[in-house]
Image (cartoon, rainbow, N blue to C red; front, side, top):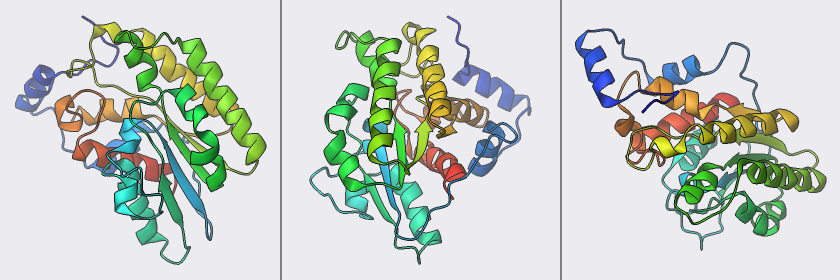
Amino acid sequence: MQFKYYNNRRNFIRKAAMGSLMALSIPEIVAASFSPGEVKKIIPGKGNVILFQGDSITDAGRNRDDNSFNNPVALGSGYAMLAGAALLEKYSGLDLKIHNKGISGNKVYQLAERWDKDCLDLKPDILSILIGVNDIWHKLNGDYKGTVDIYRNDYIALLDSTRKALPDVKLVICEPFAVPEIQAVDDKWYPEFYSYQKAAREIADKFGALFIPYQKIFDEAQKQAPGSYWTPDGVHPSLAGAQLMASAWLEVVK
């Protein structure tokens, strides 16, 4: 079995035993993952509404009945809460309003089905989207018959409608990611999953969105600790993985 991003526990242990690794902090891992000149930044403004959208990785166990902003219960226990907390601490004078509307299991078309209520009605100034893992995972499980073309076309249609309704919204597109050989992620994902990641980057370019290369970030992180340290199932981040994601997100919104 071969993966483009192959870094398993045996490799980690062998390298560590040879003393070939230097421990890096999460900020250093993140910095090493962005290409020189790749990082552009969004600086929040007074009263900005910031919205995190996506699937279970963004949802992170939030209380979906709580529609308040800046509330840990409504923000969940993942990267959205960690990134939001950092922004609120840094910009205490800006009266930011941070929402999380990720829903576990969502694919792109399911975002579209709830987009008016869970996005457009909130009128975000900064909109961050992480979507794509379920578009392939559910297909592999036999619960969905999507393709990368459906993913791409649905995503473009979603952002077209968003731009029309919110012409000044600043977009952050997060790359869907997976860690091979950790529980849910096996060789059936590849090479097809690469095409979803490529589509996400192309869509970010098309809409002038900032792009967070989460796959490269998790690949880099595995040089410091095995994949299971960052994600117990290959998809959903651990606490350390959530902090890794939040730190990367704060590289572009800061």
